[in-house]
Image 1 (cartoon, rainbow, N blue to C red):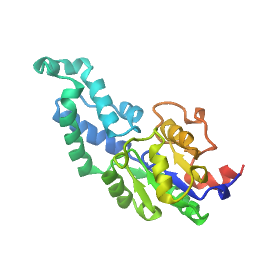
Image 2: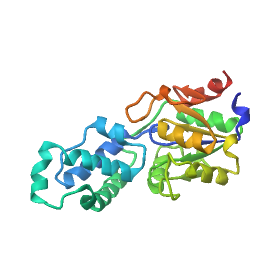
Image 3: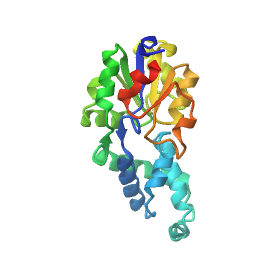
Image 4: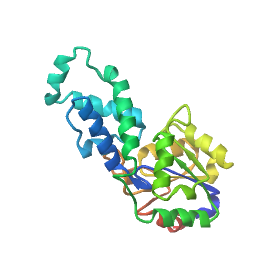
Length: 236
């Protein structure tokens, strides 16, 4: 099979190139503190990331508001619901995430080398993430990865987010490739579902955030421990 069947690769960001769990945890817990809600555990954040900021915030709010220690706040605010708090929480989260974007995150081993290998094989690269575009661009720049990508798209770039295939179709259009000529590289069933629905080849990394589920149970062309393993994995 090999890389020769592909002309481009679409690469996810959070959990695939950069371990951003620390950024999410800090920004969310500062937001929760501003709302007088108990802090979220790292495990909750890890299970919830990957489907966009709106899903992340709503899911964490719902979980924290249901905790016994949050009941006092709810009694003081009779109209206290996820919907009633969401707009304020979103604004607070944006503020806090912008202030710390990249400060509590690290590039995974082999990412830059793996991206360079894909480019060296003649593949055009695009980053496609459910993270808001402005945050994604700033993070790629801060981590020295921006130069690898001709295109960068975020969760607010299109009408729908992954796992819907629309963002992949649009990214392929921008790259000038057909989906079957394009590789989707991600860390979760979210990426795989979008890739399969679009008709892309799918490669999944064995680290990252897959909603608490083992990633090897998700169908893919290959599962790799580092991006540098992709050329060999696809030749097997």
